[in-house]
Amino acid sequence: MGIASAVTFGVSTVPSQQLLIHEWINPVTLYFYRSCGIALCTYLIYRPKIWFPSLHGHLSIRGITVIIQWICLFTALKFADGTLVVSLAFTSPLFAVFLAWLYFNERITPAKLTACVITILGIIITVV
Image 1 (cartoon, one colour):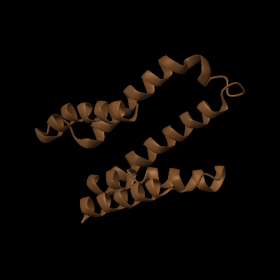
Image 2 (cartoon, one colour):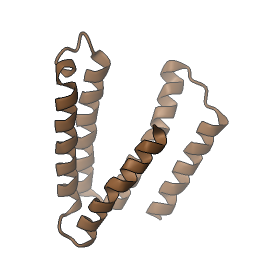
Image 3 (cartoon, helix red, strand yellow):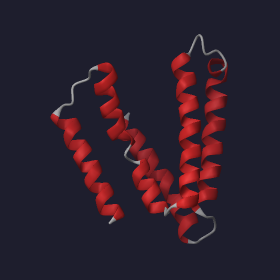
């Protein structure tokens, strides 16, 4: 599923790239429309579950945190360079590894550590 997710994301970036390169839309508007589409799809797929937090607490917490994440992303895009903001947004796997270790006592394996280093190097290369 990870490969399928990566391929789907890669394919979805082609239209976005064309829209941005030809300046048919600005990045903030593109992210706004994209987030509206994601929110609508999430609602249509999970609508019976979202409104019953006692039955599906994890899904409700996930939905709330995604909304907060998008608001923070939009706010950051207003005040900083888009390349920097998106690069920093891709640090989320680093936080996921740390929080999994902290709260769920997951081991930090050499593969996870290597992935974290590669992520940090990629961000440094992109930003500098």
